[in-house]
Length: 60
Image (cartoon, rainbow, N blue to C red; front, side, top):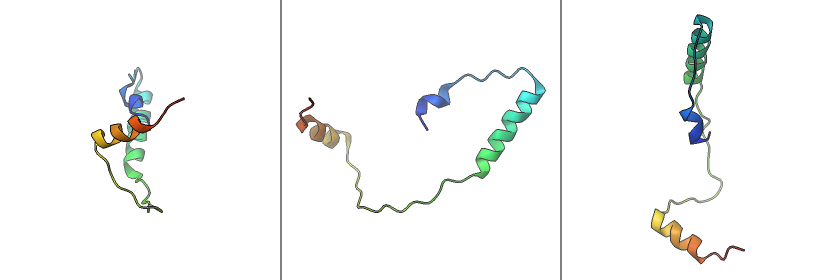
C-alpha cells in the first residue's frame, strides 16, 4: 500500500458511516499478512551503497 494513502481525510457525517468505519478497522485488525519465504538470497544495503550502485548505471 502506498504511504500517501494513509494521509487522506475521512469525513464522517452520520452514525452509520462511523459504524462502518469502525467495523472496517476491526476487520482489518483481524487479518494478518501472509508469511513469505524468499526464494533467493536477500541482503539489505545502506543508503550510500544504493547511491553508489545507481550512480554507476547509465540512464538513457
